[in-house]
Length: 182
Image (cartoon, rainbow, N blue to C red; front, top):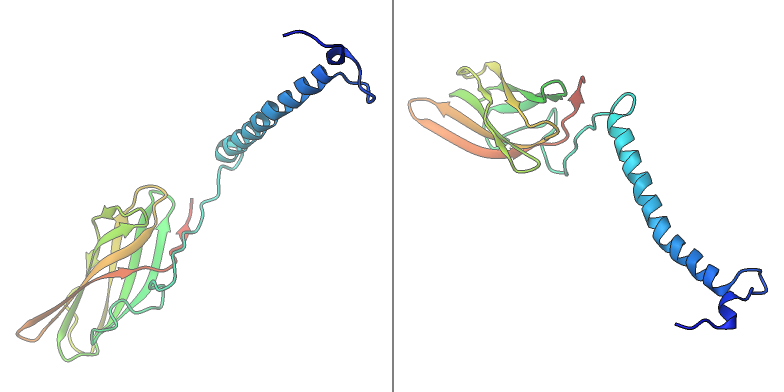
């Protein structure tokens, strides 16, 4: 490549064509590298900086059962979600359901597998003692979730008996579950 007098000549602004091209190429490469470096440093600082990261409160889409909601509205007994929390220490999900047996049959409620928001099935749960007609009881289920996971649904089984057994099995979508402690 041969040089022309214009390559080295100063422009009216005091800068040569070659210097201008070098400056523009440097900016074109340097700015994205600077942005990526700052982003990486921000993420590292957020993760390992003083105080660590705050634990977010998981939330789920509309339509899920939240505290105060009925798990199985189609049964004669009222299965009301009394509490639901995730303990940040150990990442244990616990939920308690109050059962008011308004039927004329003995009633039992079982909480089975939880499915996380990532689709992972986690065994655990709990079951109530048999609840006679007109009486109340409760059941608390516990599940050790993978760290950072949120419960999206729980498999629920309701049994009612009066010589024969009626069984209702359903996967119940859960609403917002707060994270406590940690």
